[in-house]
Image 1 (spheres, rainbow, N blue to C red):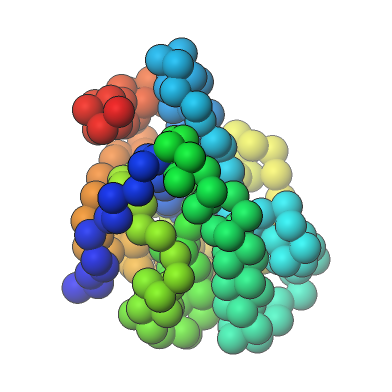
Image 2 (cartoon, rainbow, N blue to C red):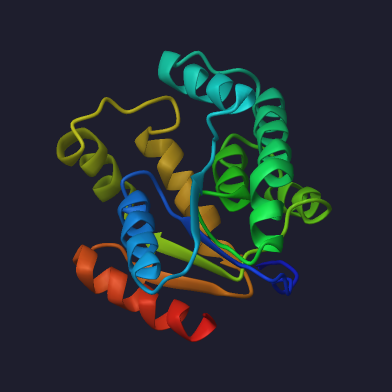
Length: 206
């Protein structure tokens, strides 16, 4: 069982969306951000990898299909995340804003863990510098469904992270997560049904 410390009590609200590629995370991030802005909350939408130097490096590598070693890949994600936390996440939370994030270090544990790195070591490492979310919405779909959505619904060619075998291993890590604030949601429900389930969790926190 993989466990993490409870969420911190920052002035803001930190909401993270996780799941396999094709699970619908990005759609739900947008829907939630719009719903909260309609309720006059100041919302920051962000994602990882970021558009910063390290994030661009990761995206270019994924698009090319030329993978670096798991250890170097992990280091790139950590550098990108540390910069993201320092420049955007922490200042936004300290200002009382709602941060809605598409992927966080749980994805790193799943995807780099699927390449043979120790999942618990990745999680423990992040505990030393990464603020814990108030809620983690894990939208669950099978690897087969996720990959089909990437290929058909989104009309995209899968990148280096989006192989069936890799997604199957990632799914196993996500299945083992036991995190305070974790909310597992059936990703094969309609987008509106998923959104309503998320609102049920978020609105009492505002």
